Length: 385
Image 1: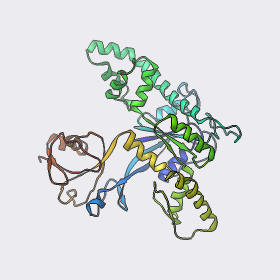
Image 2: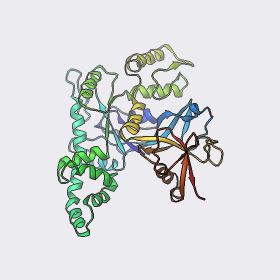
Image 3: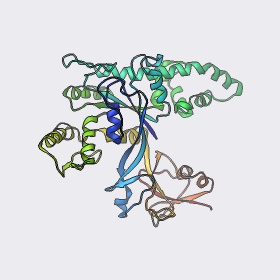
Image 4: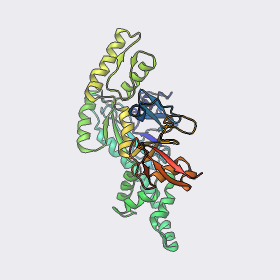
């Protein structure tokens, strides 16, 4: 799973990456701070079955803290995009190429209007409309896809006729390096002609959904713009990467008890009056208003709500809830909604799918190959050995 932090220059992408991961990335208040893409590991945070089942778990591919399962995902912060990026302006070609394998994109938007589409600072009495930046980013990705499709479509159509196979299959093979598959193309081609710009737009929505993280929500102008954007678009989450980073670092230094996504924190350790004032400002102006800084919510919502993945927990023994070595609830797998038992077996190990017999749920009830998994399911896969 790879999520891309995208946006125009100086929007807060690198701060968002650091706030989500505490990775050591360069942060500065000027355009093109990021040249080479930064990659780090963040976490989805969801309820772990251990608490409901009354057991102590021993995660192997993730971690569990206070009954919450932290599921690792790769996060990528790429160079800022500017108008004309698909033509190579700014760092456009590099920006777009870096996004090829991203499963979903989180558009870190400077919702305050204090920076324009080139990342230049704006005076407070002449703010920029951040809606312009949304249009620029989506338009540049659409044009990039459109150009790639146009370079390949005639050859693909001719080859499809000659081999008597679907155009969608061949085009899917051509675009597989962009993280686009045949199913994405089928859905898009049912809505628009493959040679049209509309097709590229629909294909982008199908294959690389974009969530808007309305960043710098701690600023008054951002709050007003957020309400306007939310009224016109779906999948918009208010965020304050600066404040999330401040809370994460305060927790790291033992000043507060705080976990990503929490709606509040508690003071502990040695905190001076100035630090208390700063933390109270965060609590009053973001946590109390929006329920969180939004950074963790953006990650969770992208994967669980937009990409439609669910966490499931395969075990070797449903009675012991463990793997063959005795590790309780050892692994969590992210699978698409609608994934069946046999499909899960194939994701765990190809041998399991080849020799699949059935499965057992928590009630030790037998389930078949076509049984659809639900979020948080704990299941045993039965296969011949």
